[in-house]
Length: 403
Image (cartoon, rainbow, N blue to C red; front, side):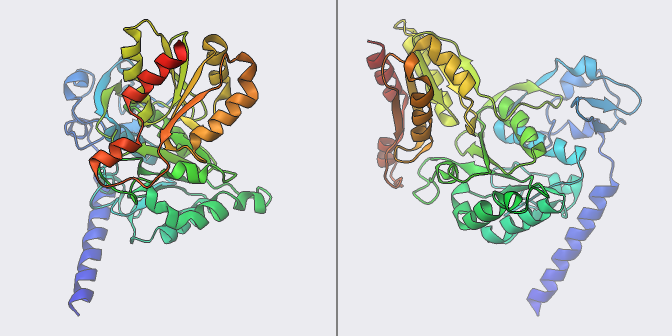
């Protein structure tokens, strides 16, 4: 009996909060005054542009904010604020939910708790619990719910508390999300984003350290995107939400607190293009996610011994941006691939194959891969460290390849 009473009490609180959040206008200056909100902490940068009673409206394709009585987008174009990846993803989700009423979030603890890494913090207050939907710990069920709603015109963002656990929803992702459009002669789209923390964390153990991107890359019909900085995280997530295909959006568990200054106003980035992070002419390093940061640190050290490395963040893991890769290899003629997935059947294995098939005539020597060891990742920090790619490995191999 007590459980029944508590359930209806909880339901009443949720409905009350949801109703209030729809009625309350979002005041701009109170909205930007807190680090817990998408534009938090930027009051000092933009207070001269706005009064305290104007509300935020998100534009359409130009992605520029406008204000009730005036248009300040030209003045705000160059305004930036420091954000980490978690906050940048939060901004992107808020902006897309504000722009399109069909966008909603579902997953474990995304509502009241705000997500395992606070990407959805306070979104239930702004949009109500119908659009920020807490689900049971049952990945196959809420993945199926998201897929079904996308078939009917919604744009779900499914958050996995840890992407390793989405193995439990493999059937729904593979046979439903990725194949139903083909099975039904393209009569509908399935615009679903599957996102959450993944990668090898600090002593998270084998079950939380699986690289789901290597499992799903062989499934036809899915796009795979990996963010690595606050700037690309925000722009890529917005584009992924607008894409009409299933998108697996990878966020590395160790990168959520990486900070940089990003534009205050909304923007998008193409999800199928690689980024040239650092220019060089001696060696091309292909990387993604956390290996981008490893590659950049290694490149700085290599520059001290006059080895100029070109670092390319792949971003799109399916399909690869082979145009950008090829342009770099024509210049450097050497290729080093960094991959957090295992060497056998991983992202690096497929990338190696495509590089050799398409660009072998440009290369002075075969590409080299540095991958995670093909073993379950241990809880022990010493054993974990022995399995992963480190800066020292990159410096050693790049030096060897240059000689």
